[in-house]
Length: 190
Length: 190
DNA sequence: TTAATTTCTTAAGATATCTTAAGTAGATTG
DNA sequence: CAATCTACTTAAGATATCTTAAGAAATTAA
Image 1 (cartoon, protein in one colour):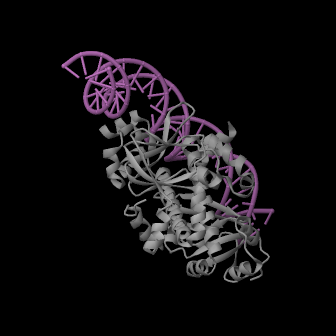
Image 2: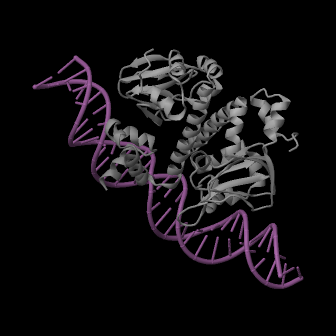
Image 3: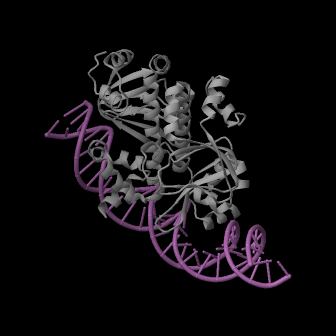
């Protein structure tokens, strides 16, 4: 595993790792490459991996009782993605993770990660901090939902994640924002 | 700090601490007691503490643009509560935390906790795990909101947290569920 | 380049939920 | 005990958003 991926910067952004530590840690990751519309995790399977996106764009979603896709997460370059609930509890995942664009990702499986936590307490610290940040982010997103109407959610979305509006089809943004595509279309017109 | 509080069980539920470790850790906590309607954290202040509720019931809320209370969290015995965003980023808290019942809580401030992380890596592991669980819980709650209509959110709430329905006034439950008290009243009737 | 598929738009009618305003019951305080 | 405040209920009208159905536009495949 060559160690000049952007993940290195990500590690060092939060924790002061040595080269040697990073190299040892990264040696346990594997690079996975996916085409468009390929599955990283299938609903119903236990999620044994965390993925760090090197390049590309993925979404996490599930089908509701009417068979409509409900997207609950996107991830792009330098984001971690996994199904946390499934990963932590080792229960079947309620979501699938699938690429929207061709994607390269570094993946690490749970057991290996647990071993690395023991060997490198700094890595556990890194993920304690990352998890806190994820918690803050999801709370933020939550507040946006509770406080804003559809139109403002959309405006907030394209303002805070402008590149997504370019790279993600509108109906997927609608799904993520919990708006019907028809209504989003109407909102954009007005 | 006497060490026979329930927090001890909570620590040991996730991590195998020794008596000595626990006693050292707990010696850095302080016990705080509050009456009904007392403030643990005031909106606008930086949240420097994590609280572990020994006894009682608190809520976290803020006032929206119309001056209505929006409750985003409750916590009872054996729950941790803090404003994570404020605590992590050291930014002014967007919520207040206030007791609903007279409450006893163990509190620990951020700097002391950081020191304890260094001294006791197991504690960092404990909070890494706790934070993961919080993340899962908030995602769960989030999904409930996105998938269920008001009535089902209410039914889901009284089913999954029955004692809250007893201990928390109905209009606060309405606030937590993002329903107007009038509409909740109507839903209960139907 | 045509055909097929995917994505986006339009519009009418239906529904969930809110707003406002008032009234009732219960709890707390003087 | 009376008075005040707090919590809950009722109902009418307003509004945001969804549903359904259809067609237009754009992208992908043959």
